Length: 376
Image (cartoon, one colour):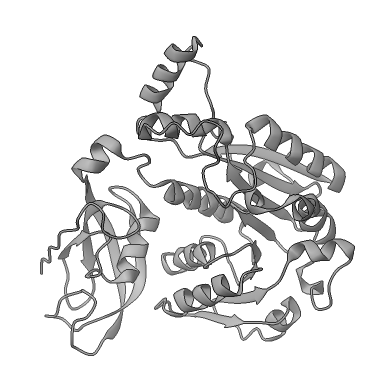
């Protein structure tokens, strides 16, 4: 069965790529599906998996509620859906003409960032994860996808519980909707009033996700009632969060995340403002001095971020490892042009688009727990 749909260059929010994937299951071995990303015709579960997997040769799996054999594997088909375990391999990726000449990142920056986070999760193998500033549940969805895509007997890190906390009721409602639609076996998501409620309600699912309305900075004055189960959790993740914080909650971030919660590990990612000039050069937009997102309160240089992280690590008994994530397709060309314009040597780099700090509690730290240093 072959299905082809074309996507306009401005369709959808995301990856303007045509990906051919091989889908196989018991009733349709060797199925070939041509996916035009960003259209409403593609099953959202398939699209999310392709976005997570990235480029050619990547493989994954998901539990898909799809029509019986003989019907198209697209949303909106009239037949009653049947749950199947689906194996997916990306055979090739064809960029559109607009992406080939003007695209920034391939895979997208978000993809590259979550691939990095997945690598951290696989190495640390946490059983309990706190997702601070979870937003609409993207990180939880990726972790759920990691579990679903694991081979039998290999959970790629046994993740039993993931609790997402956000101060936005609207974001949590969107997260609940997004996550409840995932057709994953052994995955359960619920809204909870406190971490204690979440842990007490545990029912032994392969992966349990909780969503909670809350402001972590409030814990600086003392651990809120019901938060006790989070102390000493395996991993706290704050993915693209700190740049959204006003001065007071930013000042509370390290004391709460490291000092009060005392996790075995913490991962913080944030934009690298030094890289903005690369983006501006490629997009031909002169936005010198401007932040990447109007909702950002600030963006740090590498020196500023590393200074903040080293101070936090020393204050609360952690080691810290720095990583760079995300490089634009035309980065080298942009750097040459910037060097020529500013009279700087071409070797004067600007780092990566995203910078990350991995904190390990000192008694937990070991060489095997850390990823090898990435490009700064």
